[in-house]
Length: 346
Image 1: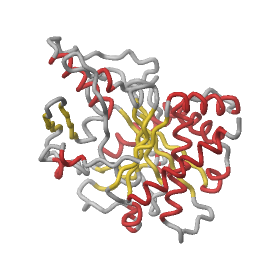
Image 2 (image 1 turned 30 degrees about the vertical axis):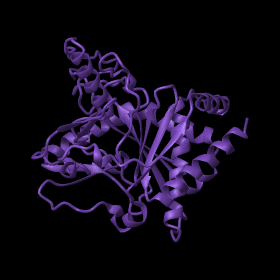
Image 3 (image 1 turned 135 degrees about the horizontal axis):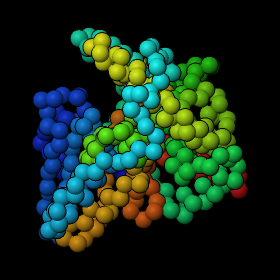
C-alpha cells in the first residue's frame, strides 16, 4: 500500500475545487509545477464536470507536443457509427427515472447532503491505497474468466468485477450492523460516448468530459456468491445495452432540463452504489516533455464511493481507493482474496 501526501504538489485553489462543488466561480483547471534538481512534478486540478481523466491526458499530451516545438492538434469531429440525433431518439415523454438511476429536483431547491451522509463518517478517510495488478496477472485472470463466460469480456470487465466485490466486502465490514436481506448493490461505471458506438453526432473531440455512467445492479447475496465470470458477463451485458439506455436518458434529461430541474445520480443511504472508472487506455506515458517519458503517474484522493483504475505504464493497472488506513488495508486484503480464489478456479 502506498500513501502519498498530494497537498505538497497541488495548486493553491485546490481547497475550493476539490471536492468538486460545480461552482462556476472557481477555475475549470489549475496547474502547479514543482521543480527539483533532477525532476519536475506537474499537478493538475480540474472540475470534473468540465473534464474527465481522458481529457486531462489529452491536454497534457497536447501541452507536451507544443512544449517540444510541435503544433496544437486540431479538434476533430468523430463519425458516429450509430446516430443519436433527435430524430432517432425514442419517443419518451416521461421515461422511468428509476431505470436510469438519476433523480430530478427543482433547480431552485436547496442543496441536500448525499443520501449516504449518515454512514459517511464510517466510510470516508484521507488515506489512499494503490493496488497494483501486473500485465501477467491481468492476462491470466482474463484467460480464466473468458473460458467460463458465455460472451466476449474485456480485461476491464474482469478487474471491475473483482473491484466491485472487494468494495462490497469492505462496505459490509464498515457497516457491520447492516441487515443485507433483500438489499442490492450498484456498480456505476464510466462509459465514454466519444469513443463508443454512440458518439454524439456533431460533437467535437477535445479535452472535455465525454463520459456518462453505466449502471449494473445485483443483489448483495448474488454478487457475493456468483463466480467472477458471471459478474463480468453481467457487466458486459450492461455495456452492450448502454446505447439504448443512453438515448432514454438523454430524452429524460432534456425533458427535466426544460422544466428547470437538476438531475443527479442516485445513491443509496448505505453507500452500496460504487463508482468504478477505468482509464487504463489513456496513455499518460506518452506525455513526453523534452523527449523523456514521465517517470510516474499518480492519482489524487477519491471519496469512499469511488475507485479508479489507471495504467501503470507497463501494461498493468493500478487500482486506487481511499478511506481510512485500516479500511484501505481491508480493501487490499479483499482484493488479494478475490484474486487467489479466481486463480484457483483454473
